[in-house]
Amino acid sequence: MEFQIFTAWEEVRKVCNPDLLPEIHNDVFCLDTEKETAQTVFLWKSQAGISLLELLDREAEKESGESARLARQLYENELRAAQLVKKEDGMENFLSLLFCFTEAAFVGAVFFHIPVQVQKKESFGTSFYTENTEFEATFVRIDGLAETGREKDCVLSGRIFGKKQEGTGESSFQALAVKAFFTGSRLMLVTGECSFLPVGLFGGNGGYWEPFELHGVYNGVQYHYTLRETVNYALRDSLLRSFSVETVTVATGEEVSNRIVKLKCGGKLRFERLSEVFDPFSYGPVSSEEDGYIGYDNLQITITQGETEKVEVNCGGILLKTGEAVPRKDSLWEQFAHGEPEFVCFQNGKTPEALGYRRIQCPAVQRRLGEQWYGIAVPVTLCDGVCIRLLFAFSGNQFFAGSSLAGNGSAAGLTFSLNELFKVHCTTIAILPYEREDKTKTVLLYLKGIRVSLFGLTFPPEACSIVWLARGSGNAPGWYAVYGKGKQVVKADGNEY
Image (cartoon, rainbow, N blue to C red; front, side):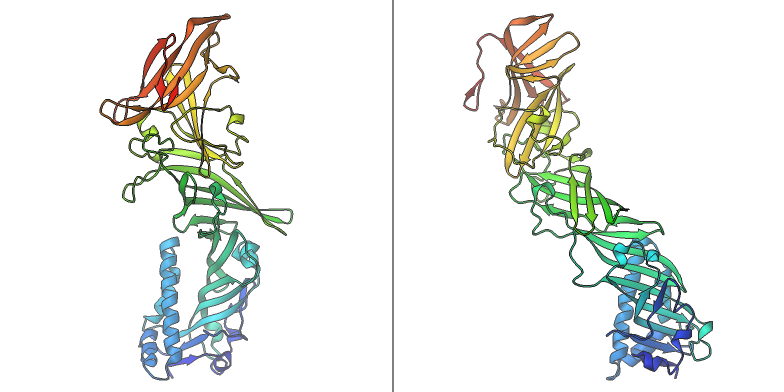
């Protein structure tokens, strides 16, 4: 017969001796010719002139063609897998292997779902992918007359798939699958899929999050990983509305008996608005149609896998990318001229005060931050040689506003050096709400009790106050300054300054 379908090795052995097929047993892997799975199917085509797919479809139309219908479904599964490989890795070899179904000249056999024993695990990458993994050849193409006495003249090629067995333990960084494409005993391409669940990042509980998935290509030394697709994580009860993971690089290594995995993540941060008047975090969506965000990079996660798993997150090295930033309209940093913002957190200092930030008055309720806090520090140049850093921090929904001037703070006020000779003292810094003449609302920066010291002398005799008002969106960067002295009082937000 020109076409036959088998579902057991016992039937195949009536046609040929599978153990004599070249490279079915080699030092890298071997196809298990004693075991079958529920989806094991063998297709045998001994004559040219009509395609395997046409023969398969004819058989599938018969009432008794259950095996043919299964084989047709398995072929379509492999076709989808081959198209994905071409898209992700640019490899067309696997797709061309499936031409045996449409080429009328093809003579040989096709095996589906044959259990595989891995002989050389390092050929598939690290033990992370091979331990407690079940392997099978989902598709094997045999070119040539695979008949008794002619087995050694055939050529084998196909795809091997490995999946972690169920119940082998849960991990934050978990292997999903390993895939390999082979010709004879040579592996043409080895890829690995894994996932990571970012529980606890930025104070989120992660109970309702999905892990992000990584696609790795093995180059014989290590896997090179890419993120399958962007993932967005929403936070509850936090001033950080959500964060996305859009880029990931992974480095792996061994340390004593432990396996070390280091991830470096990047993406976007999106913050909540505090109020219409005061929007210090600035980077967040205004509506579902208008997005707002600031890019970040260098979020470092280290996973130690051994007898117990340890996950360490380093947010202290996060870099903010202003080139990838869209501030909300009329937000603080959309209106005010400022320098490059920096990400600051509890890993840089136990508290904002420990980093030199002093709490300041602002039009928002402030509370004590928790042990794990995060924030954005932004430098604002007031004039040549005078720069103030404003910190807006959060721990969940708790908010903190602080300022830091170059130099040392003191109980009596804030002091910084203007140059080697001059020292400037300031007793109060505040952010105050302000209504423009056109009734639009903004804020201003208020510095009270400013005096300058030189050689032990202090002037002016009476301290002055300075108010900086942003020019507003669309105007050249800069601040307005208003000077005064004496017993003038500034009233704002129910307080006197």
